[in-house]
Image (cartoon, rainbow, N blue to C red; front, side, top):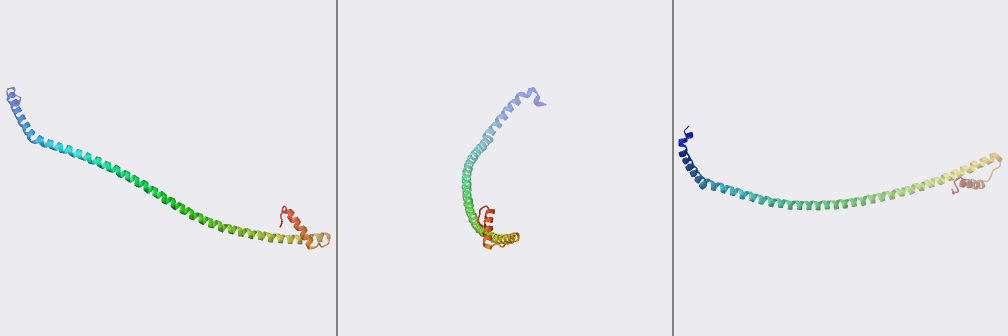
Length: 168
């Protein structure tokens, strides 16, 4: 191999230096400025992109704040509407309940009056039966007939005593 021959090392080194210098000059005059421009444009584009991303980030924070504010306002409005509806519904329920309670109260009073009337009739019938039974018992035991008014007064007194002093 001729390139490994020590006798030709010096001319090879000279040609190496000459080709390197020519290559360096060509690269320095043509390719390196283009590469430098590309790198500069790339750096500028990156800086612009970073600036735009910061602006977009700030805008997104503002939009998020507006969204949160709108959400809070909507939630407060929904709560107030719900509260008003709840109050209105409660008022309607109370009105219906009061009406139903009034109707039931009237029905209860009517039923109590009927019960009291039926009780009074039953007591009168009971009193009549007791007077008849007592009259029959006394007549059978003694053979004498007692007057209805005296017997009625005695039975009424006994019924009052039996009911704890309450009148019929």
